[in-house]
Length: 170
Image: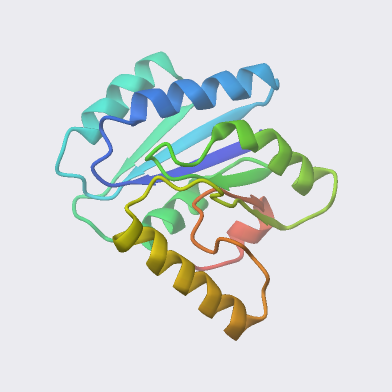
C-alpha cells in the first residue's frame, strides 16, 4: 500500500464527509493505493456514526474509537500502530490541511529520501487571539530553542516514512 492517512479527531462530525470525499478524489487522481484511519478520540457528537456511515461508501476507511478523550498523542500512536502504508500521513479533521498537498509530500519522501516532511499552514483560519498569535509565539520559541527551522511546528499535515512511525513513541 502506498499511503496511510491517520486522522485524529474530536467532535468533527460536520467536516468528515467533505474530508473523506476530498482525500478519495486526490488518491484516485494520483492512482495511489491507500487507507484512511480515523481515530475518534472520545467524541461526544455524532463523529463515530458519521465514520461508520462513510465506511459503507469508502472501503479504504478504517475507524478506531476511544471510549473517552485521551488526547491527540494517544490517537496518533494508535493510528501509527495500525498504519500499513509505505508513507504515513497525519492530517487534522477540520479541513485546514489540504489533501491536495499529499502527492508532493509523498514524492519528497519516496523520491527525495526524506524521512519526515512537515506541512505549513500559510493561510490560517483560526481565531487570531486564541490560536494564531499563540502559535506564532510557540513556533518562534521552538525554532530558537531547538535550532530546527520549521515555519509551523503545529501543522497537522505531515508525511513520514513508515519505519519512522513504527519506531517512535508519540
